Image (cartoon, rainbow, N blue to C red):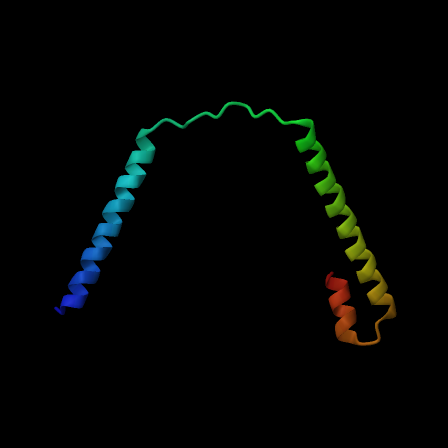
Length: 84
């Protein structure tokens, strides 16, 4: 058996041993509980702004797709607009 094959088998064995020890270490530890997170008013406002902008962007995309379906003359463009 070539040395390269032996080296690959040894490396694979080391990887399996490392994975097994990591899994065993995680299984023996109890799950860590995190304290409840307090959210500031700024954080909530930032999240609300993100959601509002995402909805506006999605509605704009739907509007453009509807417009493209009505105005396009190329069938490929119409199909793409329908998928949007």
